[in-house]
Length: 130
Length: 375
Image (cartoon, rainbow over all chains, first blue to last red; front, side, top):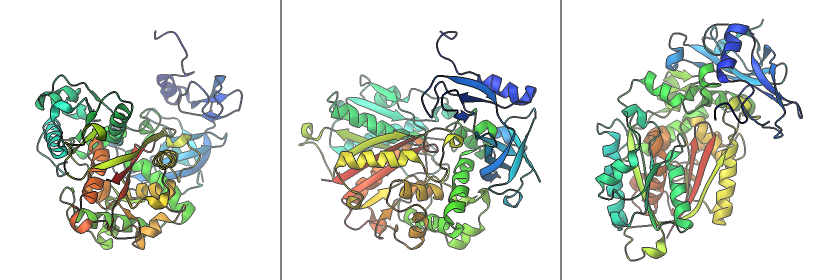
């Protein structure tokens, strides 16, 4: 069963391998309507098409919204406080990620330009671009 | 329901106890139950799954079928919906709905980690999100777009703590001042400690019946379920177009009002999902009771006080009554029933005859809206 049927075009393991080892953020693009996203889907959430392809997402963008996490989950225990942001990438994809350098709300604003940075840590890490 | 807070009993003990109370208060016999719907999203924190047969055995009805319904924070309202559908469809005549959660034996770190599992673990939690963090990104966007002020979020916390101080079931029993709110530490900016619901233990149970079959048995003040509706939204916040609204709240409310053949003005009061103060704002706006950007101001002006024009969370809400995840949806219904029965004391909503319960799973991936009418 596991090797048959429709599958997402990248596995979660491959996604994490991409940003930790290959220096690439994978996403999907719909060949019909060109909708892009990072989270895993089998059909395009915008138009329902099955014609999805794996693409590399842009690595720069702007902060769409954010918070600063003072109380982390166990996987981020040694990193708090840090910023958590939804980012509008320059190619139109919206992703989430974290900013180790954003230690308070004074360090980050909606609209700030950010750049993705390859790291062996968990999650997509972004840095502010001056 | 029991008193929410730090409860020493195990989850199964609380669940069986509130279930027996609910059955005895309803007037029907345990043998009348046709199905038990249990919610216990984080039962694994107690190394226990498959709670239904344990509860049914404790109640002397081991032959009754049961299952566990999980929909994150909206689990027991989803269980109520399943009970409603089974009865409306004619499959059974009576159901027990029970929601329970026990997490206080865990440290804050472990509890925060469990809660984060209700989000998209791979694409949100692994990127640094926590539950307060996700609602904080909604709050940031709302503050920026509508100019919502910290003090207006604080007004919701102050109101709900005041209501909880008049609710013997509530986790928090003391009112708080705006100064206390503003001086509390920041958890996930802009959300402060007093913007956040506590980690609570607790259990609540409901008995749902086909009224025509149990006319002679029903005791106390019953309520008619006029609507039981559910809806969904895209799971991860990053995939939604608007960060200042939860689409499922709007859809579920519209469905429920249509089902009940009612308009918004027919609703006297409501229990809404305020896991964080911003969530109460979103609930009021997304369900269409206030224009976008107006709900927080309404709270600050007293419109949503228990004796205001439209009472919101007279129980104290998740925010101050407490939020034992899987018990919350059923507990909202308990509050509506207590208001109908005139048992709400100092938090009484004047002339309460139609109540709405709004219960969100996680950041709105799922949502239930129930409308109850006093009969």
